[in-house]
Length: 142
Image: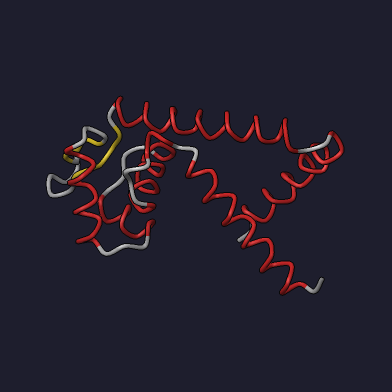
C-alpha cells in the first residue's frame, strides 16, 4: 500500500470509529459536533473567550454566539466577566456541564472496552496497544 492509500485508509478508519463512538453517547445525542467540540474544549482547557472558541472550532463568531446561548440555556456553561477587561467574558463549564462530559466518556469507554474484549483476539489486543503509541505520535505531530 502506497503512502497516499495508507493515509486515506487511516483517515477513513479513524472517522468511522469516531462516528461509532459518538453513537455510544446517549447523553449527548441532541448536540451537534460543533457543540460537542465546544464543550470538550472547555472541559480540557478551562475558561475561554467566545472568540477563542470560535477560532478553535472553525466557526464564525455569530455561530459560536448561537451555540453558547443554546448550551447556556441548558445549564452547561456559565459566563464570567474578565477581571482585567470588563468588555470580555470568559466561558466555562458548570458542574452539570462537567458531569455530562464525564458521563459521555464513561459511556464510550464502556462500549469500547466491551467491544475490544469480545471482538479482538489477544494478539490483536497486543497489536492495538502498539498501534496506540504510533497513533498518538501522529496526533501530536505538527
